[in-house]
Length: 308
Ligand code: SF4
Ligand code: SF4
Ligand code: SF4
Image 1 (spheres, rainbow, N blue to C red):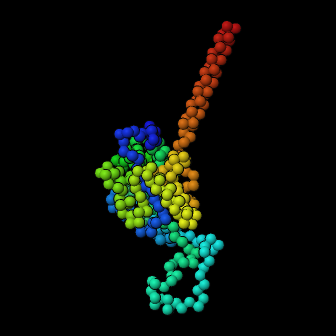
Image 2: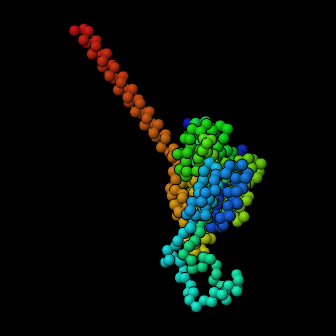
Image 3: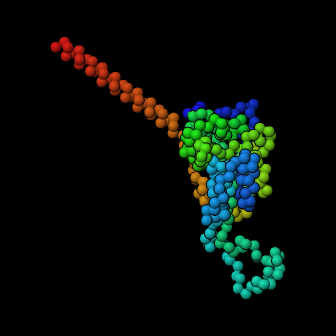
């Protein structure tokens, strides 16, 4: 295990401010420009073009060759949760069609019981990152920007980081064995540029910048949405008091995290390691003391027998 420290311990006046992503899923249109930009900039190999048969989503999830993944979630909302459906009886559809897009009430979701949730997922660049804790080679490291990067030329393919990640982000590439994930475009940050995915997003769903400023923006945005009646709007990963100390990449969601395939209460998986090592040390010392006592007792008994 390497001696990696969480971000706040590393910070000093010399280093740049911690940066991150605020992904506002309420304005994501599912264009996947972020996925494509990530692939192109980082020269990531293709990962198949299979469709699940349940969604238009062909990349299906984050993985060694998908560092950005746009989830397409089709929801049937309960009828009682929707405004009452318009009465279409007596509507002259041919006359409405003649009016083209000027026809009233023809937007696809009017009165519909379906809605699409779209969300561009990515590595969370956790404040307390278990992947760092367990990496034995130092391939995973914390950068001066507070992000978490894996170096492909140092990774030995042990795979310890894979089960350590509470979000299921990092993965070993089949046929290669090494682990890969989002680097928050470390090379671009070093050159003073924003990450490729944020640059490509046409709706500014992916916002990049200093984490403190992003958290303030996100608080304002969630307040605006709730005031407008979007009661499901909530922040995910923005709380520095959560089980991973807050995420460097956090989200505004429109439903429960589980709907997006995110764990509701993520916890750094190495949280209990210090206590486990302490207990193991105590157990080992107790065993040693017991063994020493047995040998000492045997020695005394042997001397007593010899005297008789
Ligand atoms: S999300 Fe997973 S891979 Fe990314 S920094 Fe956190 S623990 Fe590491
Ligand atoms: S920050 Fe860079 S590596 Fe990470 S998802 Fe965006 S484009 Fe890909
Ligand atoms: S996050 Fe931006 S680029 Fe990615 S799918 Fe949504 S709108 Fe498109």
